[in-house]
Length: 258
Length: 197
Image (tube, rainbow over all chains, first blue to last red; front, side, top):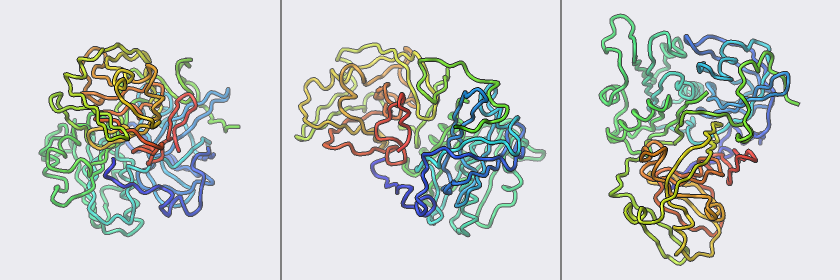
């Protein structure tokens, strides 16, 4: 957007200082794999030469079959900061080509290739001190958890709120971590199909009333990050503008396809 | 030599010569955008081409539709790796819109409602290669896909086909637009896999 200045990634300390080439493929080795929901899994991957990443960035991931066939997909990174170890969290797309392999098949010790980090728009930097509203749907939590972790690692006191919408309790990614939020992080859960027992709000899709009740108001001028499936992001972004948030303060990222 | 990912390859997609390298086929129409979807009515919609002389050529919705409207069947390729083959659009060729435009500049900045920008060489908009489209698959273009009108430059990655198109500004030099300032390639040829800067 012409009225938004976006510093180049290279100006930030993470990738720039070391002048790491973000365009080359690096070999990563899976060092841990944990289920994150009924359909998702997080992978921790050691990537020698990785130059660190900002919260919210993504990476290209390349798989090569024994006969040379390759497939590449982009995934948001759940971790942030310097270092050569990154975390991804993948939700299995039914009949997908890559996600079922990453969720069901890949094992500790397996190798794959990564290139990045990528993207300079849907990012949060620790030097940003203003209030932040995060709104995630399903596995759209991944770049948002990266921002939450980046805030904690930097001992940032920027006010953070998260509204996290999932179908049912067992569909949440990073539940344990989000149930013990750092000071200054406020987490609200929303269930679209089935709630926990004794839950006040009936199951249902997110509404403008939910956003008015459980997110930072426009008067606090938060930067709002919205990530999830397209329908979720469209509905939330429209409602935020309707509540009075300037469009330029609402950053969106969507996922779809396989 | 790429490393082999043990056990990968069992669920591969069929390859298709219509797919540029690194793309996969989708039958959905995924959405990629950076912020809320602008809601622009056809009454308020306006499109302009501004040149170095200060001339601004303007069209409103009726004036656009008074021009020859053509059918466009084409494949589209998003930098996020999906491709969609055989999409059907209707709109007005940029050749038609540039007929009365006098410029010596060789580059264009596309401007959208909502503030999005993307850069493209003028040569890539000429020669029956680019259109202002207002229909997709026989229906008015949805706002989330860029309606009421978007640019269609299908031989480049799809972010060059600016949604909610509002105007073109001639540029003396090839300046980066929004995504180009955020890590994406200045030109974006999918067949050369020019994804990133």
